[in-house]
Image (cartoon, rainbow, N blue to C red):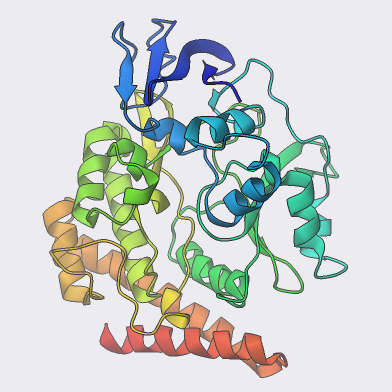
Length: 388
C-alpha cells in the first residue's frame, strides 16, 4: 500500500499525507483558507508532523466489526497499519475530505424498501460483502455504509446500516427506541428506521446534502486532538468547552442547549457509551459551524449491569440527578436554571412517551429475546423517571 496520499477538500487537491520513519506528515499544497483539512489544522507552510495518524484522518478508519472483516480479507497480502488501512479505504471515502480527485463509490445499490423489508436474516451479511470496503465507519458495532437509490427521484443516498451480534442481542431495537427519545425531545436527528424484522437500524448520513455537496464533520476526538483509543478519556465539561471554542456565535446558544439535552437523554436512557466520538460538529466553513445531530444512543445497562457513564461530569461517572445536571447546565452551558429545567422536562416527557410505546409493543411481542430487551429498557427508563 502507498505511504503517500493526496488529500482533497471539496474535490480539490489540498495537500499530501505521507509516512516517513514512523512519523505521519501532512503538508499543505494549497494556501486557500477555505480548503482547511480540519478546524484544528489551518493552512500553513510548516508541516503537521505527528507520531500517530492525525486525528482528522484517523476518524475515517473503520473500527471493531468492520476492521475485523477487512483484516480477515487483506492482512495476509497488505500491511494494514494506520496508513495502509487509510490507503485501502481512501478511494471510497466520500465527504468534504477525500483522498483522490475521483472517488470510487460502490456501484451496487439497493432501495430503502429492501432494507426496511428484508426477505431473510442474511441481508446484513450480504451488505457486508457488498459494501465493507466502502464503509469508513468508526465504532465497534457491526455496521456498513450502503448506497441507497430513491425510487422517486433516482437520487443516490448513503445510509449507515447497523446490525448486532450475540454479545448485544436486539441492539437495533434498543437504539431505535433510544433515538425515539432524542427525536421526541426536540433534538435534531437524521432520518432513521428499523427494519421489519428488527435486525437492522438504518440511519441516513447527516453530512451529505440533497444537492450532493458535503458538510465538514469532526468528532470531539478530532477537535480535542485525541486518537480514537482515547475516546473515553475526557469530560462532558471539555465537550461544552470545545463547543464554545469552535461553534459560530450565531449557533452557539442552540448548540449548548442541544448538547445539554443530549446529555440528559444519554443519562435517562443510561447510555454508558456516550464518549467523545459520539458528539461532533458540522460546518460549511469557518464562519458557519454548529452541533451535529444526535446519534449512536443506546441503553448499555440493558447488557451491562450497573454500567457507568463513558465520561466524567463534575468528577463522577455515576448517573447524575436532575439537580446535578441542571447545575452542570448553568456552570458549563451558559443556561439559566429555568432554561435547564425546561430542557430536562422536555426530555423527561419524551422518555414517558417512549415508555408508553414500549409497553404497547410488549403487548403483541411474541419473541422472547425481544421481550427481554424491551422489558430491561422499560425497567431502566421507569427508574429514571422515578429518580427525576
